[in-house]
Image (cartoon, rainbow, N blue to C red; front, side, top):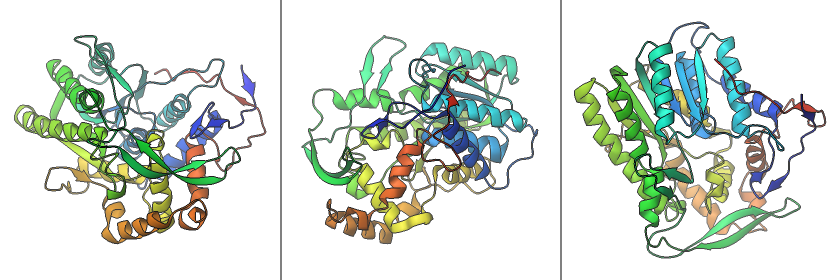
Length: 400
């Protein structure tokens, strides 16, 4: 037993500890937000979610379990409790597994490097031994700083940089007292092999490797469908995102989807798509210059009309399973971001962006919401949690 009071301590948007009770409550809230859930104990399709513990991957896991009744495997990479608490994803995974058991869902969670062939072998063995040797769906949602190529041992590192010239943008920070500041930051452009390295980590190479590995083991069911989660975003952030190194990786991901779609259609009557999700506060997005300011302003414009990740992933599962028609754009992408990129919304956000300063930001952006969302990533600012009470931090990884 290792009970203690956990106070939120952060360096910028990065928190040093996570709160197990808050993480558990957040997972409960996400599950409860799923409409018309599948009956408890119903045996749904077999699914694999790669990147199942955070952001849109977590939403995909919970929406799949609650809405569709999936069974299968979630893969993520989290740190166990030690001197510090476990990572938030560790506690969220434990909470997701608990809910899956309560609702009669057979879901196994594996903790390790999704880029490795060792993990692919573990998954393939589990699919064979536990799930009848068939996989119906694969959701790919991986955001990582590095990837080791299993064939060569080469380690690639992704970077957040513009392409061609330096990029100067407004960004949102909070000082030591929590007061908001709007500052300008300049990011140097990509150089050398920055683009190639980022594509090697965040592009479609590993996604395609997963499909090939499982296909070679004859594990893809007839009609197998796979979706990689992506983002396009606003023109306001395009220079650092869609037109930057990450954008090059996203373009590679979309090209991979087209290749896989043709291949799967011929081999198993299946398909592959990218799903373009809309803006949200995630551990990955807060690291991108300008994104925090943009999302805060977007919330200031839309308020509760913003669609949370769990709502977006319910829509995606409905389309993948045929409950709703698959709604693709001209490039074959599922678009869940229409509400964000609506011209009227973008015009309103751009107007606020243009006048945003440290003096005006509290009037233009919903900073209370944004701050709470950042803290909720780590299990803080969750209603119903007594943060003055000691909580057990030594939560075990869920076993099947």
